[in-house]
Amino acid sequence: MTGSGSTAQRVVAQRLSAASDRALSELFRARRIAVNAAPATGWHDFFDAAEHLLEPASIDLGLAALPRNDLAALASGGSGELLALTDAEGRALGAVAERLAPHAIDPLPPTDPRPADEAASARAAERAFQTLGGLADVLIHALQTPLARIGTGALSVTERRRLVEQGFADSTGEAEILVRIAVTAGLLVGRDRHLGVTESGRHWLALSTPERWATIAVRVRAALPGGLRTDNGGWIAPELWPLAYPLDTSWPAKARTWLDLCEALGMTAGDAEPAWSEGLRTGCAPDPAPLVDLMPHEVDKVFLQNDLTAISPGPLAPVFDARLRSMAVRESRAQASGYRFTEASIARALSSGESAESLRAFLGELSLTGVPQPLGYLIDRESSRHGLVRVTTDPALGMTRVLSSDETLLRTLEVDQSLTGIGLAPHGGELRTRTPRDVVFWALSDARYPVVAENARGEVVRADRHSVFDDAAPADPYAGLVERLRERQGEDTEAAWLERELATAIREKTALAIVVNMPGGSTRELLLDPIGVGGGRLRGRDAAADVERTLPLSLIASVRPA
View 1 (cartoon, rainbow, N blue to C red):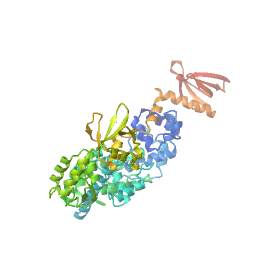
View 2 (view 1 turned 120 degrees about the vertical axis):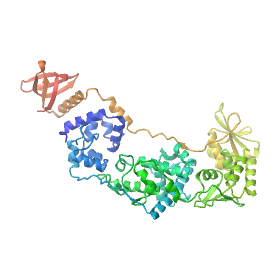
View 3 (view 1 turned 90 degrees about the horizontal axis):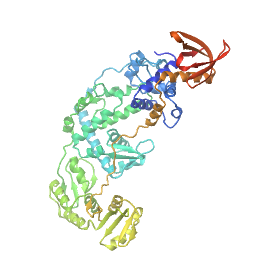
View 4 (view 1 turned 90 degrees about the vertical axis):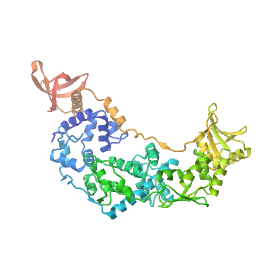
């Protein structure tokens, strides 16, 4: 165990200055350092940071962030290097040992989960299937309208209720789990007050069910806290998860959340392990085949009916479900799902790039009963009207233009109260606004006008409504603090530490015993009352000789309180 507070502070400061920026950020995050509040705003150098990190409350936070096995090793003296908790040899600093002493902590026992029986495996597969369907629903919804979240980053209560009302989840608790899984797997990401679909999320929607599950399972495994992970990249037995962080009072609730996420994905089956998760737990690539064998059989055909509905005789394969939902409204979500075609849904599909021909071709291949006449009429009617309103951009004016050969329709757009937000104003035989083209396009489409988007050359283009958020990780909140400390980091940490000790002695009026290097290699000890330090020199009063001495700092070998 490494000794005095002054020595430990210097050890920690030196180790901080030698650490990587990433290690410093992880340390500050574990110690819950608020970058825009005290103490961080008052830190001038790594010595200030070390002084705070060695305070009892900060040490307790550091210990609480350590997994059980690391704590047991630290208490026994056999730990590896832990930044700001140990010296370079991995021995606990004295102040750390004092805070850890009251806790008797044993390492986790090596334990493998028991295999799930047939009934438990079937329930896990059913739960996983429901979760994958719910995740797809949430992502498709969020592509159109990003989810609202509160200041803490959690999904808002209103948004959770909306997801339940729209049938994406059976309860607000389930809605919260679905969103947590999506965020953990990188399918959703937070930006400001919203959660939006990432490029990875949009790509995930195009995958098959086995690929969807395997992708999320691997990403959730990678996101598990270090105390749950094993050296081979897997995880410890789930029954041990609540024991992983014994000094973190909030850990039991966090462990429950991780267990709930994994159970929702069928990665666990209560306190047992389904066959398809053994490879995941041992760090191998997942094999979803045993899981898929227990899931409901997916179909690739539907019944198209004369009442403008489609009935799927089983769960529709994701690739077909996603495209069908781009042209029809899903009315029920079950193993036999129902969809309804409306004027608005067909118009939306046409606005998203479909044509009458592509709609008929897809539905003809998908249908077990052909394309019913009423549906064919609906497609033809909407297709004939489609494009009566054209939205384009005039680069020279920097404005969006709304054009139509039907002057009556333009006048209707001008006075439509639902469109006041986009600011349409008459100009000659057209309407103009400074609102961006795609925003105007989707406002008109939502109001059920037969609209197309055109580029500046008059060519029909697809207006992308999808609100896809960048996959890039958010900026490191500690980057500025680390940069500031680096700027004040001198090359000679020993000299910086000496100046700090002298400045403290001057401020506290403490007499010092100073060892000075003399010519010829000898040393001499002086007892001084320090007066000032600057310009690389120390001024102090030698009470014994009743003189004031000035010493170059470069000659001072060591100092200690007299």
